[in-house]
Image 1 (tube, rainbow, N blue to C red):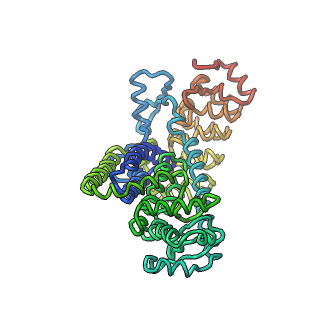
Image 2 (image 1 turned 90 degrees about the horizontal axis):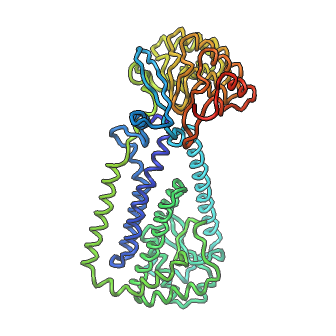
Image 3 (image 1 turned 60 degrees about the vertical axis):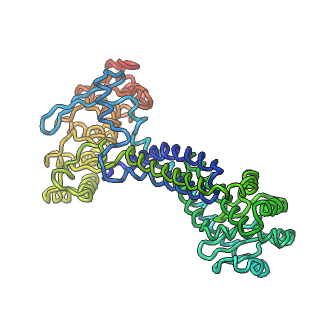
Length: 526
């Protein structure tokens, strides 16, 4: 099970960036291959777009549990190399083994829970906004269709070319020919455009829209916009999508040209149609696809139409390029599977005895922590009697003792200690009981934990030390007590892109700052 969902999200995002960059290179090369038809190129780019969206999900596949950043490995390697800016603190396990814990340089910059949660929040808000815009586009498309009137003369003009489930309608709100409607597609045409074009030119433009319907482009475009809503922050995926849009239009141009008088004749109809429009269509706000697309791409579309005859004579060469492109996509899948880390149990967290030794389920652990945080003594006793590990942990909540210490449950802290809870049991991202109590300013609980053997100089990765937390929160009584119990006033960590954090430079309360200075705290690294 993935421990921190925020770490999983960051890992997925990082994997997406390098994978989509590789696929963007592929998309640029493929979109420039004039040896391939636009239809083939559009499907190749669709495959690249789909892989860019789906391949990061390989982090969820079974395999070796390799996080994006293996903190324990990075810390050990840095320590062996004698890297500066590394703080050591000795820890003792419940079994009496002595461990050496290091806080790596730039700890917060490589995965601080606070930073990860902030990034996840930004991702969520952006996705929500993008999905809202997509929903508004769907609503606007429905309104357009509801206000349109059936164009029977245009339907007769197209005859059997028009799919049986499709319709053509006039809409004053449509700024160009476009298809709306996923289940029952409808081609909307501005009435003035239909009046100003010859039947042959109008038929050419309608053939383009019919090509969109036959290719299921509206479904694909909707799925594409949904994916872009999820990866709204991805520049590479957006560029791939932009090229896919162009190839989709060029593919429909080719189909329409083959059904009409050829590339040159269709290009003429396209240019005449564009010249009749006063404003460019904004289809990004609608769930729609249309003939004119982005006008900035018009020159390339016309050039492709004018060179159609030459492409048709080299179909053998086309097949070789198709195979080569398909092999490139398959190779990308292989690279992705080989290089993408797997996120099983979060290796940034200490092994949970609840899940590995006692068989405590996550639901039972959550119930225990909730009861301890709320001070429900009888419930905690019953759960422990039923075999729930008193030190079982849940990422984001910590342990029962951490929860009780955080919420100031003094009687519960005594009860948990009596039941065998370890006063130094930590969960990275949630600290340990003494850090939680010091951060919240619960002096009575700090005293109980120290009396039970809690280490006042314990360093927990990403959560620093009890004294740093008490100093930052401005709790002078807790700071005074910790120093009296032997807390090192100069024990600090390196975090936040190399910034030094110590009890003194984290002090915001002048009285706390003066107290630390009086007891030997110095500015900067000691």
